[in-house]
Image (cartoon, rainbow, N blue to C red):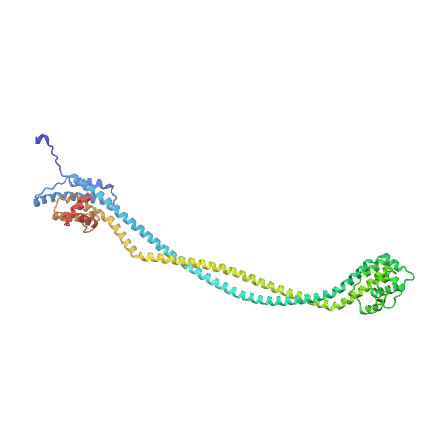
Length: 483
């Protein structure tokens, strides 16, 4: 029954070269910093696997216990190493990437701090320039405002003087107008009388051979007034005066009632005082004589009133001229005042704009200071962290290299040490570490395989769950949880 129902599988050990070739082939899909490491790792794996044969013999001799290894164990060693190394590399790369991002952010913040310092220095220069420019504008505005005040005071005095002169001239003119108002009816009556004269009426009067004495007196008054005749007042001279009725009327119309010599008035005075010398009496004798009589009487009346008012009119003229000169002077002063006021207004507008720009620049500078203060607090607060992270990144880069050997030691530990006691485990670990070092495979000198397979938190968790605290139990737990 044993012969017919059993199959015996006999495993023959693989030679070192075969083990190395197999391991090298399976390791090719792992990225390595140096191609020589594939052969070195393969050789170390072969050494680890073959070292177990010698350990098994010693273990049997010492502990009377059997332990076997097969090519399958070697293949599992390769597979476990690849998984462990990839997993540990991924963790290290993740931590390294996170720290490098943090370092990049810190460097960016430091660069921004430098940029903020430069911006702040530029802003402060701008603030100083704007403060200086604003102070200059303030001085200009102050100086021009003082000028404007002086001009305003001057203009006020000129305006008061001009107003006083204007009031005086107006009062004198009102008085003169009042006096002249009395002469206006006489002048109007004289003009009406002249307007009533016609060429035919003058022709009729001139044609009288022996005119009434009253008519001769009227023509005498006209000769005295119009021709300034002193002696020859007879009728023939009067006819000569009226020889051309149209020209005579033009002379009457053009007569200036304001400019009559005093001797003419004195000569006319006895003539005008005669009882018949009025329009109502004369119109019954000759219409032309009546109208000329009326004209002479009213012209004389107007002239007398006008000469009485003439000094007043001269005063009006002088006052008006003085007022106009004062107004012209005031206009110049007001023009100068307006120029100064316009200049002050322009400077005030510039000053307002300059103050707004200064306030804006100062606000920007304050914001820049606040940002700089916050950034410097952040940079200074993280300065130690920056150094620590930098050191950690360097350590992680080195760890990414030493993981090649560390994971090799941890994989060998998981794959082969479980059956052995503590002393055998120590011997194997020492031998494997020495071989890794001799082959120049990167690894952490004195590394404990347990630290590769588990961390302190894992060990604490196991102890809380009832795991004994001895080294063998903890190593066994690490091996079991890693598989």
